[in-house]
Length: 208
View 1 (tube, rainbow, N blue to C red):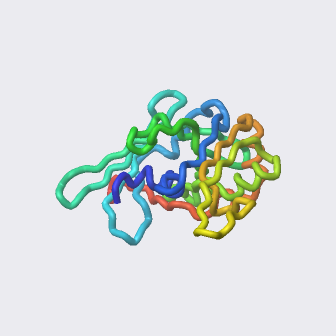
View 2 (cartoon, rainbow, N blue to C red; view 1 turned 90 degrees about the vertical axis):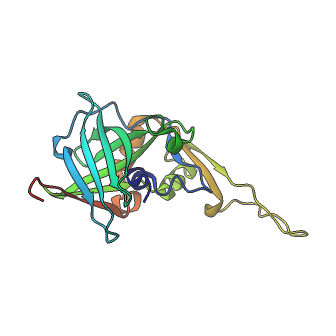
View 3 (spheres, rainbow, N blue to C red; view 1 turned 45 degrees about the vertical axis):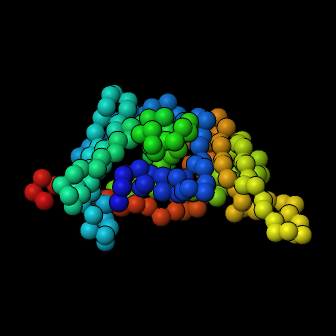
């Protein structure tokens, strides 16, 4: 499971046939440090992967997550993801900048993507990726400012191209709205629609 952490963060946006959803602006300026994130976490999965997520501070406003996967041949596969927080009375978010990721993962993209996180209890961390479908709908209806590009349509000989692009033909999504508008949209929206299935992590205690 190569570079597990970054796949967790961007499992949908790095699909080969799809360019990632990006936001020109972050949700806010860096919102301080959440010490509850500090420590070592491991994913709750049935695959038996030996992956550990180390989270700490890089500065007074920037945090960093480092994933370490223990490979069968004894090698360590690592991935590093700096991020900063946006915290509201309703939700807590990670702001991740593509330029801060490894070059082979960022692939030249620029801008931000976002994740929401919660704690069901002191030893469980849920991390949710922002789904792009409701963002596409919001841009189309004018609730958010942004740009959508579509994949080139192909037609068999003698057939006519469809005049209207479909949801499946969306290629790139760029959110251009102001930080405050985007944050208000996320906070006011339906959480299960915007942030569907979470990735689950359990805290690694020193006695484990």
